[in-house]
Length: 80
Image 1 (cartoon, rainbow, N blue to C red):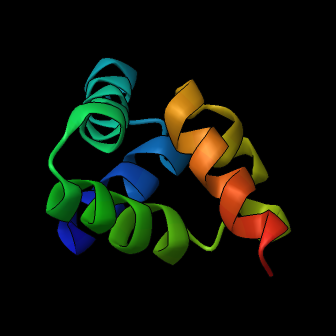
Image 2 (cartoon, helix red, strand yellow):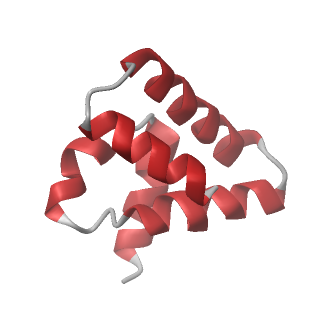
Image 3 (tube, helix red, strand yellow):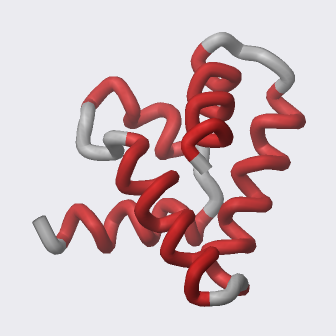
């Protein structure tokens, strides 16, 4: 999951292959919403939480996320 997170962040900010970046984000979103508990937890912790969603520089990246990933980021922010 960490490698996927690093790749997506790098691809997003380096404007590399937007189609692939969005495909990975949608796959992660689907895994978070419809996956097994272990997979949902991996996405919530190793992708969403470790993406430093609280940092202002990440705002554009988080804004590009599908609804489920954004909702998880908001949920995590509301518990801090």
